[in-house]
Image 1 (cartoon, rainbow, N blue to C red):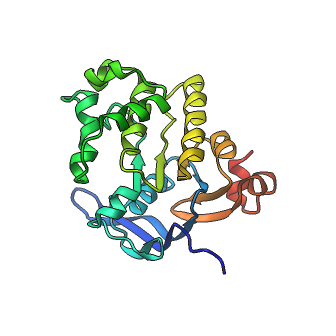
Image 2 (cartoon, helix red, strand yellow; image 1 turned 30 degrees about the vertical axis):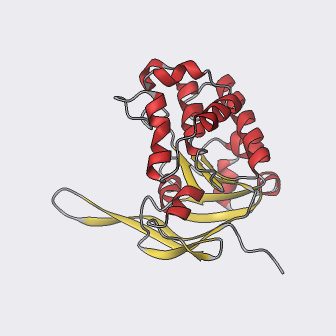
Image 3 (tube, rainbow, N blue to C red; image 1 turned 135 degrees about the vertical axis):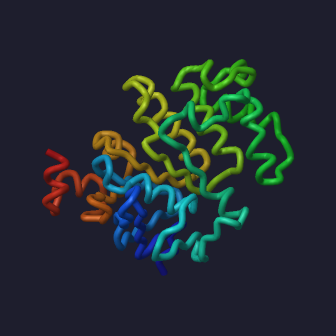
Length: 247
């Protein structure tokens, strides 16, 4: 019997009301189906404005879809369920803005413990900082006082405090230069292997998706136009948009 996906989203659609005077709805996602298995690194690639970030926010339940359902470990996902919120964490594109600028990194690291009613564990913070190659000295600094690379590694460390089963990386390396990106990706591979955690990697960076993922969804204008084994999709694209994207 085939194992159930860790997370599955089916028939997901989302639109927003736009316009200051004449209100209308703009369709962002249409009839999206995705599966993410335990311990798997799955990619979602497409141009800016294709709906990637909206999909990320919906599968983490930061936003509600208009239609469709999300299952986590075979059960309906609920944003009020603390088990789901601990299990599915998101890392955003802008590392500096993901922290409260008025708080030190150390105070921000305490937020997951408070939010999930967990006892503060200083040793866990130290362990995560060691794994992310971060000096403990930045705990006393505010986010704008450290580099973007350090801030993103700190954001990832914070997302790992609750021992999630799925990490959604929404353009998490796009604001970093090439060398820092490469270092961060290698650290993510180490974390993924050590924790057997699943990643959903959302990016417009074709090379990153090819390097990191085993399966990929290609999204265009809010629809999944192609999916499958990453190497197979890249080497033999079937959809005309995918072919154009990979040129």
